[in-house]
Amino acid sequence: MKKIIILLFCLVVGATEMLSAQTTSDVELQYKRSSLYSLLISHNKAQFAGEIENVFFDIPIPDKFNNHDLSVKVITSPENKTDEQTITTFLTQNDVAKHVVGRWFNRDPESGVCDMNLISERGLYNASYLDVEMAKMSQRGFGILADAGEQLIGNTFVLVNDIRYNDRSKGARIGGAVAGGILSVLGSLFGLGDVGDLISEGVGAMISSLKGFGVTVTSYLYRLEWNDEVANTFYTQHYLSEGETDTAKRDAFAQSDIFKLTYVGKQSTTSGNLTMASGVDFDPVAMIRKVCARAIDESIIALQRAHDEFKIKTPIHSVEPDITAHIGLKEGVTEGNRYEVLEPRYDKDGKVVFARVGVVQPVKGKIWDNRYMATEEGSAGSKLSATTFRKVTGGKFYPGLLLREIKTK
Image (cartoon, rainbow, N blue to C red; front, side, top):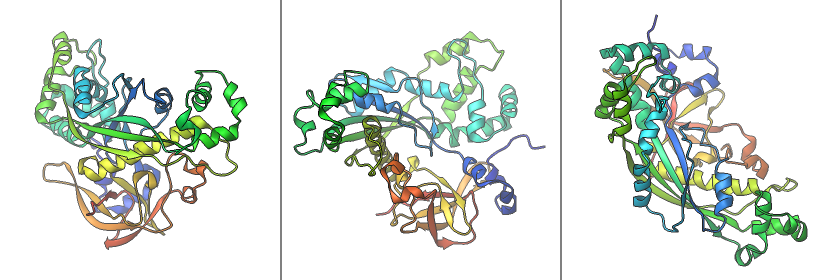
């Protein structure tokens, strides 16, 4: 009986017939994804700051990442200027790295008790086995935990988004008389005012004004530092199992300064204009959410292209009759992109490594539009359920192999 369940597709390398017994939806879930904590900087004196803050809470974490959000989602700043040093100082002073680590181990702040449930869930390990190995601190247990740390905890990112209203209307009423017009309408929709303007101005006039609404997003990316030294310190000096009482370990974690976030880089993007399909009911709140969500997606795409460590890996969904994967315009797929096909393998130490076994390219006209509200917008690509790829190089592919975008010059 196997003591631990590692990635299923790693167990079946060279034995693809075993994959046929799994559904493609199972295969999609059986790989180690990066984890993301997304925050908003809200400038409370800036135009539309309240509206942007309200919609941000409903913008989902991109589904190619594990959701690692903490209870704090918005940082309020009275200052108009934002820079990397200001954000870094905030994250450090508020022990965000420590809270991120605590979330990985479901740490109870009162007792200090931790568990391995989230590690086992995201890493496809057997939770009860990990608990036993943690208690024994065996060599094998440390090996597994090292792999989990390298593949999971070390790929935890914090994304801080500075979203600013950007007037793109060039003369639309929204640019010159916000206080007397559209702001009142939006205020009523958010419960911040009455609906008198909505009645007097009319829905048509409101829609005309909102077509000029756009935002500029500057996203600052940080990565959790997790190495052998940090891991060993945490497991030996801070980790408390269920039923274990050791106030020294609990207090050591609270007082520790070994947990840190490393600044990776930043990217700025500007949204397009609001659009919608004819005949679709107009919801200003949803449309503003769409603008913000798409701008954040564009920032993430730019960060991934600039920093390989932040790139996502996406499983091949099917190979017959076509090679398909569940990525699309939301992830920046274009017909000019190329993707390496990666096969997970074990190295001599038993850790997972990825070997390139081919290259694929998206097929023109068969790129999925999976952006936020693409269906409501009436995009033709939104009627697809995946993106189709053609093989450029490589042998026989199978579902579960991973795609990663190749950096182009």
